[in-house]
Amino acid sequence: MFDIKIYKPKTLDDALEIKANLLNDIAVLAGGTDLTIRLKEKTIIPKGILDISGLEDLKFVLEDNAILNIGPLCTHNELSDRHTDWGALIDSYAPELGEGCRVLGSPQIRNIATIGGNIVNSSPVGDTIPPLFVLGARLKVQSLKGERYVDIADFATAPGKNVLKPTELLTGIVFEKHRKKDRGFFNKIGQRRALFIAKSSVAFKGSWNGDIFSGVKIALGAVAPTVIFAPETAAFLNDNKLTRDTLDQACNIIRTEGRPINDLRSTVQYRRVVLGALLKKGLLPFLGKK
Image 1 (cartoon, rainbow, N blue to C red):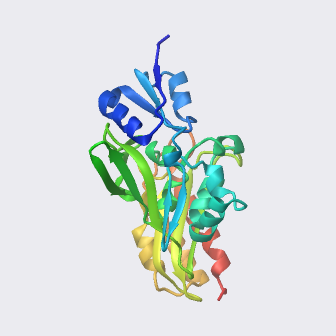
Image 2 (spheres, rainbow, N blue to C red; image 1 turned 90 degrees about the horizontal axis):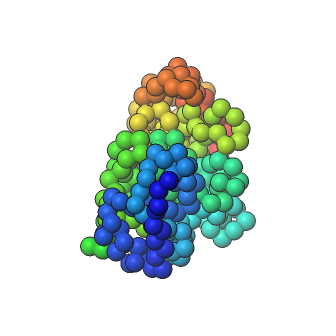
């Protein structure tokens, strides 16, 4: 057995001071759904745990004109429940993110797991990350020395690894709200309906002008070491009239843009086929829709 000291800071500054002093010897606990498993399996044995779950300074959804700013300690339930003020904001102005939060794990997990934890875990199968890619999110990270912003697309460098420094904490997720004509979706497929980890996922955002999308962004999850964009598919759909033929062509293109591997959960071929199916599922409702 091993002894681990628990630190429970009362303020963000206290948390950052602990991070600055202990550096790599400490693990951060937010929701804990991932950390508790890693501790149980002894894949990590830190000298201390920094429990930031009680920091109300990191739990918020703020609307500032065209911008939404989300605190990293917001749970997936809080961001996906349309009947709450926060969930209603996400549903109105970032529906693809709301859907990513809605399909993550079980209701019990969604009630505990935080969006900040999903981001910092830096898994290519993280359900909130592809939506944040297409939303153009920027991540606010802080240390005692100050703050900086990192584009979500530049944050993860490999599975489980990112650019966060040992002295830093994620303190905000910032992106532009959907405008009136913007549309977005997030679709994924896994082994089973509940509690499934994505085999492939697709997030989409674009401005709908009757039969044409403009400003298209598409992100893919679970088909590369990190979440990636699908620039060729986005360029093909951008300003191109959406018909069954163009949709079929786009589905063929997107199958070539992932970099999947064979593993215990799926095969390369299946993951490529599914990418096309997930894109088609999201775009079919727009055919013939003005």
